[in-house]
Length: 434
Image 1: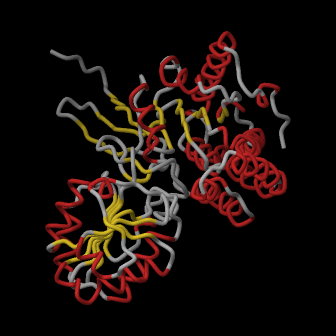
Image 2 (image 1 turned 135 degrees about the vertical axis):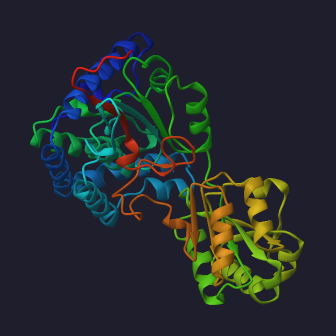
């Protein structure tokens, strides 16, 4: 692994030190971004493949670093959900490496001509994909974001400045070292992927408000308070989502076995991810046959159910839901459940309480499914599938930086294509405007 810079172990930079430190990072990133924009597909792919090899070769070092982070997290009494986000094991490290390789295998998004036309005066105009430039990513807990974000930005020709959470400091440094090894193997600048080397919280504020000269876009990935702060303080465009209040609607025409399987998976596969289902909606016409089995299955699996009056009547273990529960992103083994009067009532509930992230309908009726898929205005809508598929890797994008609930530029999983912009290339033969 490459030798770490002395700043990399600095627990906190003083106020006087922060500006020159961050500006140095910004200048280096801007220079690297220009070099990356003109690098070849082969060179960037070589860096990614070398990164994947370094991740595998340094598995033990990464696990040792992660063990330090987990110990610190336990001493701070972080929740089980946050510990799960932080945890790395052999399977997750291999998944990281494969994710980087999958990104390398994707088509190069740069230089793609997305439109091409010729004007009556003979000028040819093309719209061509180009990198965004320098991307700042502020994230919490999950150390795999270091690999995913670094690889996605590298593939799309962007330099990236990573500011991970203090709880994953050691893991992030170990993974970042693998990315630097990959860059060096392909003769690309180390500064193409930089990790902010200080734990000083003021570094985040500096990125958001004082680096507009260097950073072109900010991507937050973490809890509600982090995303709110980024959206409120950032002086550059932000790509991100505030919450993942995801719904599963079980329609009257749902297959009971499928409904049970999908609901349990959507809620409980990983409760701490933004694609986990937080609200279960059940068609009143199916409540006599589907409600009790679904609620009982959730409760028996260790999930707390907070329900309306009808749901509470199905099992005495159900807790009464409050108005706040319909807005809640639990990120835990808790789900809110409500009986609704058909698909239109489900759509109305989602419109009022949802966060525009991911919603699923379980039904065997194609017309009902299309009505739901068309009318629900969320970044991802699914038919007969778990909301846990709200993931760039599962979409065949290799990985993702996050799920965007914005309605401009990028929406849904943010992968390599979403990390590009475009420019217009105009070719003439001496034309002048009259």
